[in-house]
Image (cartoon, rainbow, N blue to C red; front, side, top):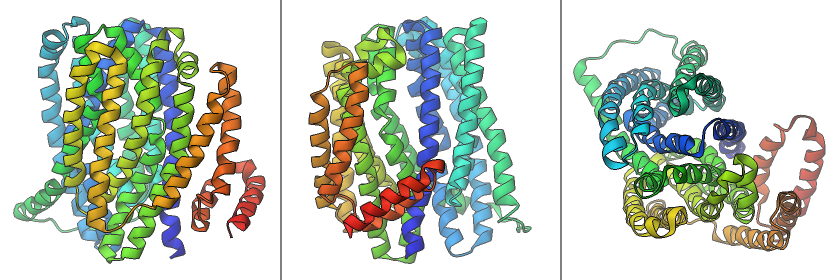
Length: 516
């Protein structure tokens, strides 16, 4: 059981550390672009992002999670032939869908840019989104393979390549005079680099280590059965993914319709900062999908409960204080990262970050549902949440500008979380660790009150963050909001801290002794 307890922690830690680095790189990208482009130019980039994300997911067809699910299941029973065939068939399917969706994006760019938004300057950037899709889809397929093999480091390496090349190429193209279109084209070149790097890692760490035999060809009829299996799982997942993007970015679309272009830039940056807490939940969710599939395959309800409760605690204990910090110091964060010109986004950020905690819980529950072969649950909840967001966006954005967009997103994320959580509890018969969660919330409330007493300035933010963190950790220990089994997670994190490992381990041992 010790190995099982550490499996979720180790996979999550790798993705977590990688996600922190990647998120930092993302902010460097935004930091540079907000200074190279005007607020209007950056607003155009912001308007293209929802289409990039939605169409990438649409072209993927939800296949990467299906690859991860079925690869992990067949690996658990040592069926090497089916592992190979799932990868091969899924890759064919994704390439075909990528071509179709890329053509679709090229066609709809003009009606959206000119017909709906009345912004001709957005036409070329929108059309360039179609160049991104094929590269991003192949990169996504390879990440699905790595996820199924629990090679979380390779997922990080591929994303790191994508981000580095996106940053370099986008900056060069903008400086050469490509303006907002250069930023979009830079993203396409970043995905191309990710494909090349990920394929090299696939050959080295999957093909040459696990798939070394010659496998018999299968008939077209047999391959159709695999397509059917993949699509049966992936269609609800892709609908879920697209609905998730709409949930994030419905506000951006209607800002393009109702408000000046610059507001899209304010909201895009506020939205990016508000998603920082999702680093934690996304890291855990990547690991919990194959872990849940494994537990379901073994029909081990105790293991399933262990994974689910760990996921709730790991996510909440880190995500809630981050949300509180961003909520309290939204204004200095926005001005520090994006200059005073983007200060109008602070109000929306304060509201959005609350919604992102709801969404963090949803991501955990959604991955668990997918791992238990119930992908329709997050799909239905996201469709309802998206409809909710559209309705409130139409009602609130014309009246309250980007504050209204933040409110509509937060309301919809709460709806999504509630529906999915209730249904997972019913299906799995496993309740969240309510007492632990209440303790974590109480510690966060005390931390928030302390930070509100400190001036809302840049210096105040630094002092408040330090004092608030100390108060939070003390409250967590006093309330015993963490358990002894969570030390496994903490040990994996400490082992990645390099020269700080020894002193932190000593402190960790004291915590463990206290909890005992």
